[in-house]
Image 1 (tube, rainbow, N blue to C red):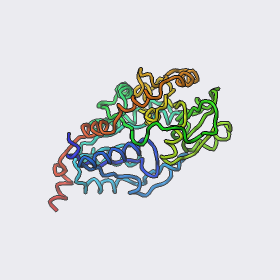
Image 2 (cartoon, rainbow, N blue to C red):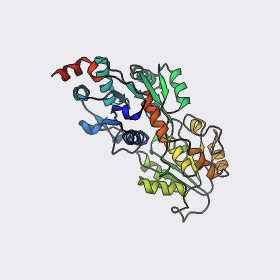
Image 3 (tube, helix red, strand yellow):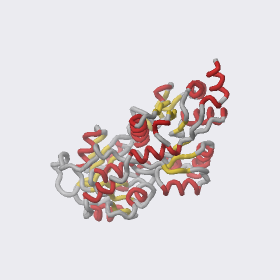
Image 4 (cartoon, rainbow, N blue to C red):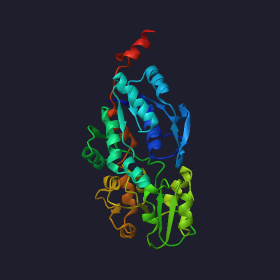
Length: 351
């Protein structure tokens, strides 16, 4: 499907000022579709009254979204609806579409069952049952990695399809070390949200030579700073500074076991940085058997072995993952419809 034919409404609970993989993916997808003559319009928490999420105040939860969501969808002239998240806005949009018989697609960006279990102990089967109900109402659920498709099929999801990810190769690229120059020995770096589900302590506890650096912000940052005073925690960095820090490190250590893809792995590789990670969804889909990372249950051994890998090979491997290809997958997965075909929209058109 040509991108120029697309005029889609995207509903997302994740949006600015959050800076995470979901938001970056949606922004990049919108930019590429616009550059190719199409259009994405977003419905976000900024359109609603919100409250901070308990335990995660930077995430805003939309209140009483149903009535306004119905009005927004009734007024839309778009030819596709995509529900990007399973939060209050996602559920509200799903309810409207199901009630009116409007086809829609969804996306599975985040392993919420594993996140919820990490925070509350709730068995993953309970959360997967709820998410299965959410996603199976749509035409397709877009998933960023092949191994995640198989996982969802195993939990009874009906129509998972691939929507991969890309990396901006003009931003994430190798360069001489310009940060952390005062440090001697190898620099092992990790960047992302500082939260319990990211399993950062699996990295922080490792006895490694040189130095450990953590880039990012999140609810666990104050606690981890106190517990690991020998580790450099940069806090939130601008994109320019974040890239400069990646370019100045030797190995990216990625300890998370709850990712559906892991954009940061791809960003590190694009900067010429080999990756050490567990052999789980995300890293094993991106790296596979390529000599650009080490996937092992022994994360210390993986990190040390990654020091020996060729940085030029890492960059070359990352160049296979383009946003243009990923966005075309998104477009091809959408469930197109004629807005005039649905009763409420017909009534509005006649009025």
